[in-house]
Image (cartoon, rainbow, N blue to C red):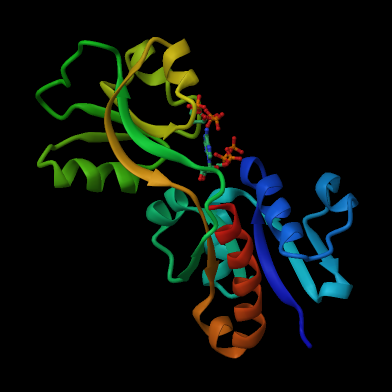
Length: 210
Ligand SMILES: Nc1ncnc2c1ncn2[C@@H]1O[C@H](COP(=O)(O)OP(=O)(O)OP(=O)(O)O)[C@@H](O)[C@H]1O
Ligand SMILES: O=P(O)(O)OC[C@H]1O[C@H](OP(=O)(O)OP(=O)(O)O)[C@H](O)[C@@H]1O
């Protein structure tokens, strides 16, 4: 049997993903959760994990250095990588929304939209028939309308606390987000049996939870 390599997103999704794998009966040692290592091999399971930034997971999978990966739907929509989506893991739920200061209209000429998701934001506003200027930021997106950098933001909302505490309101709900299991198309063909077993085991746990 050969190793299956899985690209895991560091940060928010990591612990929920590890929990799901453990519930699916993969034996992951306790050190796994706290390790600073970026490549972790679990010999007994013939699994190799690589720990990547969430936005980079589809890149590792597209290039085939990871067979599989776990990525938010937001990342999938933004990155548009050449990978297959195998399973909705139903973890780390949130949504993408348009938000801004209350009771404000967007500037009529090329309103400015700040976001970490330039591709999702431009295609959303194009579909609405609105011409906008996209300003790419890497975090603290809610700052942009408050400080006067942008008319609106396109960002993730989960509890809604960040919007509320910064005096912002939601204008439009763009799309619901959960994390997905993704696969490299060649790996899917070459290692089909092992990958299918992983999918089945994860799926049993996901369905149980519903
Ligand atoms: N409240 C939330 N904010 C951001 N992402 C969330 C939230 N809830 C769930 N998610 C999911 O988690 C993923 C982001 O995880 P995380 O915040 O750890 O990464 P990140 O945005 O790259 O963080 P950073 O740049 O701060 O390291 C998103 O792709 C999304 O699918
Ligand atoms: O609705 P809420 O539960 O408040 O969560 C949403 C917030 O969480 C994320 O930011 P994050 O904490 O990842 O920080 P960032 O600004 O560095 O991206 C996201 O970009 C929102 O700002």
